[in-house]
Image: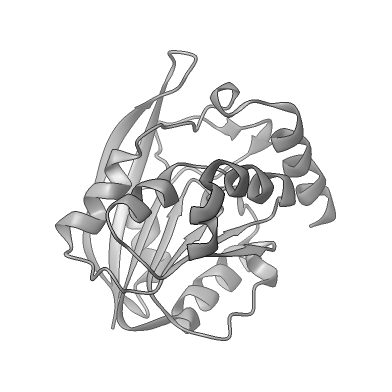
Length: 204
């Protein structure tokens, strides 16, 4: 885990926000998830591995008021705090590897865009599934996005696991009901295309 932390601290210390492939000034797919599912403005929402993405900015603009952001990189958290300015006081920031996270509360929404696919060992994946199951309230929503089976094999120099709808179902079907899955192309700042799969699950 230390090596992963060092990797991400270096990424956020050495690269500008538009020098990473996941940059989105307006993460519309994630925003649509919150709007399409009529997520209450006071819902307890956690963004996993969000780094310095603009999802939190957009959720604040939409009036969401109970926001948590977890990232392994202190540098990433520092960057988004600086960008948000006084608005950062409305967000609970957590610097932790997700697998070391021990929440003292339950969440209504667990959002993870492009973090889960970095877990490449079975026990890590199993631990993540258990963590999500224990951390979401009954009827809570999981929105998860990874590279699809048509997506890249690596991201930021690290190996990832590609996912399909059936792979997601095998992992999460014990404690969750699938609502929907879809694939989508993400255009990077370097004008390359990465194919993602996004799935929404409800805790049963």
